[in-house]
Image (cartoon, rainbow, N blue to C red; front, side, top):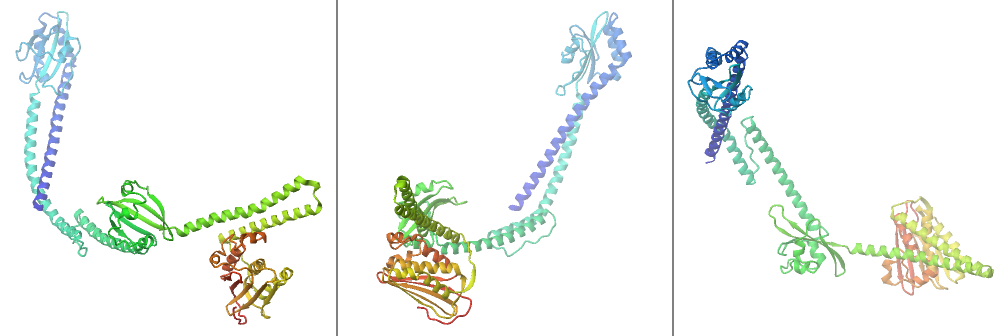
Length: 594
């Protein structure tokens, strides 16, 4: 059925092609013949009537009595040149006033008044041609002393019609021969095309069934052979593409199953069609339950009709608190590219840490504002008092006020410097000058420098460090800054008469410094936040003693830059112990960590 169908199509195409070609050729030939005869007729007439003797004879005949008969005799004498045969082409002598027939070659008593005759009646030569008319004619006015006449030549185009009929007969015969040849050629052509096309069809059916193992043999080098090679290449590329798609699908399936964000897909009826384990973990429910449809899980955010009516890229975002997690939920519609199946895709993202970070950022900005506002307020208050009182203020009070202003300025500068240092650390500025130094010697020097302040408060400062150097590789100034900060905190939060113990030691790969006090201690619930910026255990006491809440944050950043560790162990009412561990490059004496 397929073979005969292709044969029929090729035969019909060939027949239509031949018929169309013959029709076009016939039309052009007919038009060409008509145009040729029209041109030939009018050119012949102009050539004959332009002969001077002929024109003079006609005018001379018009000057005499019986001019019509003489003009008729002259036209009869020139019948050969004018092509007058008395059947298809005739001449007439017409009255120049009313176009009445005065004589002619066929004995007719009247003729139809044509546009050219009307032109001659107006005294002009009538040579107007009309290819659609059934005749060709020429009308020439002849005026003389004895009367006016019109020489009228008309051809009924019978010669043109006869020639066209002959051409039409020839074209019909050629058409019949051409149709027979085209039928034979179409069958031969279809046979040469059917075999490779059938092979392509069988190959296409195998590919449609998913069989890419067999290739189609190429027998020719023509377009069908090129098509066959292209089909083989296409089948190979399709096989490779399907393998890639399968691999990508497996990867996407793996990502879908193991991604940290939850995904739940619903059809247009709100029934679950896909979900990943992360969605169950974040929502805290088992999505295998068939009763958990869209309205149960996300219906409180927006109804499904509203979500399905959204146009891309519009989505619906909402946040929900589920247990101890903050979840951001994004709802968007989807439509299948071919099937047109629509549904809703829900993305669940855990933003708990992000919201905590944002909260910490807001608290940090608020703390910076508060910490800077306090000294600025004090400076402004004391400065305004100095301005208002002026010279009347006693010198002792003036000196005290100025000292307060200087202290608050120093405190503000210290806060700004600490913030700049933390900012550099956050920006990755690792401006550390590493060198080998004796951390035990640095600790002893720091303790001796602050011993006087300790003794003023009846406190004991105990330093235990080995006599041999404890070599550490690091930025000496930064490490000493950390030790000073920790010892200062111990002094600040230890009541008068308390005790502070500082120990230094090392092992093969690390050195350590511990600072232990008998101060007020830190509540257990506050220990996780002790290294947060601007965090204080006792804000009033810390601010009164000049603390900014940034010291331990800076200390932790410095120790981390040295690949070290800092830890705090504390018990309220009994004291606090801070331990610093740093790597070192040189071997030292063995010592036990406290």
